[in-house]
Image (cartoon, rainbow, N blue to C red; front, side, top):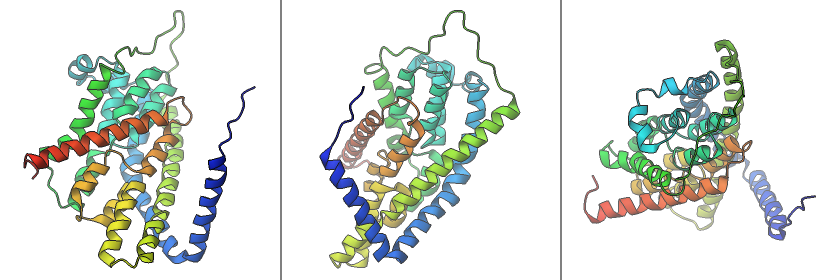
Length: 320
């Protein structure tokens, strides 16, 4: 029988944190309500319209086993470069084009449908779960008062792609695709209506879970806001502190509060994505044996690479 590990620190810290947050909500109900409503609005106005259709469409493609056909044009180029299967290549393309958390969602779906191996799923998770280009170009860069130059596009997408290529020939050099068992019959492909129904149901469940995370982590913005109030900071400094700490909690709300005050700080935080992104990623992979610790490790490495990239460009005076 497996013994449960007991951590005294957790037994003390978690209840204290829960009591503290409950007390804050009771003492400052109006502030907490506004922050929770902002998280709800961000989920309703941004996440649902931009993410839900991609979740449904991707679910249909995976269930009907159309991944190879979807990436047929890119396979001659990216296939030999990364030496991965068509299904794994599909996860790469969707992860980069649709953005977070579709990278984790698709990797978990492909793995759950047994179209890729566990090693391939871990490989996808290590570099394909990033901020989406639509979100980056339409919200992030305009909020930071920056133009969509190749410097910023490479920093956001070129670095993870090169990192993934490096991992493919180092950490994942022995990666093998899913092995088909001899004598096994191919899985029955569902009809379009069946695939649509299953995909809509699972996507609704997933998008609702993501909304809960956005509301909760936006609520946590109350903590740096109260700290700024305690230290009697000026409004400008208070917003900067709340936005900076908030970006580490929930990236969209933090960027909205920071505005264009610290654009390169935000660009360096983006690869990490914030604690809300980590929690949402965990919700996408919790029913698999994929490791959230490895995911966080890769995110921290990518963040460090991004910081070095922008510091180097600043040193060489290449920043726009």
